[in-house]
Image (cartoon, rainbow, N blue to C red; front, top):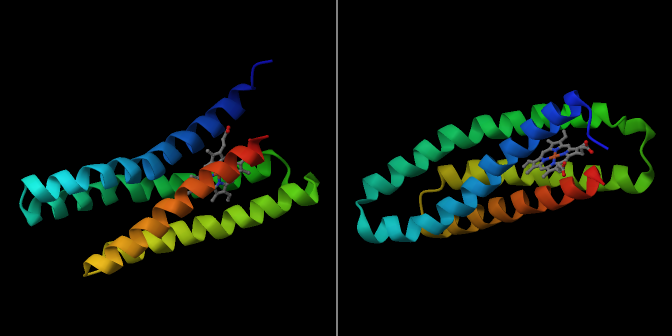
Length: 135
Ligand code: HEM
């Protein structure tokens, strides 16, 4: 059975924003070592800044469509297991956002590595928990 049109819009927006926020971080992490080797530090920083300009609006879309998702699937009527996974996902989303913000503000290699890895891992966890919620 096909999904209703509004569900297609809602989930397509949520998943597309997730591909930018999560997939973008993974691709950027894969490109940065080459950029560091082949280009000036200023180029690496400019690319990272430009990625942030794309990624943060995607995060806003994720939160907005995430709230829409929760309303559309009638949060209050879901069972306890679903609600628990939802709450864990909310915690993971907060960790993802805060970690990436700290990563952006970090001035040293260790901070960049720690906050970048945590942000990336939390983002992937949010995808997995989201797929579990979608059933
Ligand atoms: C880093 C942020 C997020 C990522 C990467 C993410 C990712 C995903 C993914 C991949 C799905 C599965 C879609 C599918 O299989 O059709 C999903 C579903 C869902 N997400 Fe998110 N999400 C994020 C943030 C949020 C937020 C902030 C909320 C709530 C405020 C939320 C609520 C939901 C709900 C309720 C579903 C199930 C929707 C349904 O069954 O129709 N998500 N998410």
